[in-house]
Length: 155
View 1 (cartoon, rainbow, N blue to C red):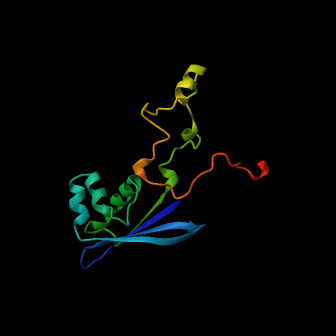
View 2 (view 1 turned 45 degrees about the vertical axis):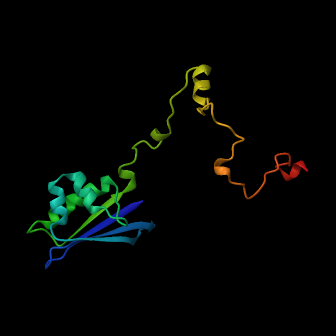
View 3 (view 1 turned 90 degrees about the vertical axis):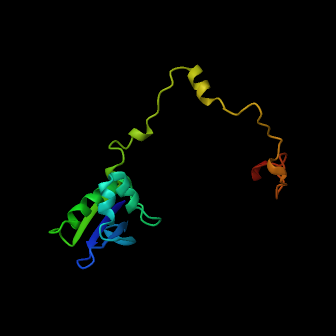
């Protein structure tokens, strides 16, 4: 998905607002969130490091990925400069930080022999696991008839 972040500096107060737009339809961006920061709020956090600045920038509703956050913060540095512009646009796409090879994430380690396969498929339940024990003494709302046919065709 494509994202667009528009950073705007208020010339009078120095406050910074960031609007996040997402491409929900082809070539059509919709506003999904707006976050506002006091003058100097992000700059003070950036002095403590990139992780602190990202943590300061994120809110419950505005939570860009670390990759996007770094790009936004780089743009914010230029924006808050005395001779910087009043508005900056940052474009990002999810595919930028995903694997370059789409099949790479789907590769599996080849198991060489049946013994490795059996070991891989073994369950890891503890010996104390008991199917007959009901948790918390609760009575189920429905009873399952294990003898009933599961498929309508079996009747």
